[in-house]
Amino acid sequence: MFLPKDTAGKRTHHLHVFGVASPHPRENRIFRDYLRARPETARRYEASKRRAADLHPDSRARYGDAKEAVVLEVMAEARLWAVSRRPGP
Image (tube, rainbow, N blue to C red; front, side, top):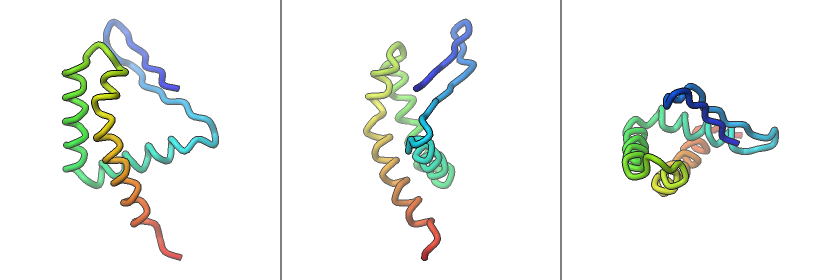
């Protein structure tokens, strides 16, 4: 569940709520940590978000669709990166 809170056109909150067994919190942390570790990828992701926002300022669904390919690509990279950082047996 995603709950944005706007006050007079200004976002004041951005809340995601997940079930206890949901994989999304872990996936979100992997994505975040990968972007922190890879500034060039963070810039690519930022550019895709800006393009999507410029193209679809009034539709969150279209905005999400417009950046989906980059998100999926970065998430695939992030998962591989996370596995490579795990300590061995």
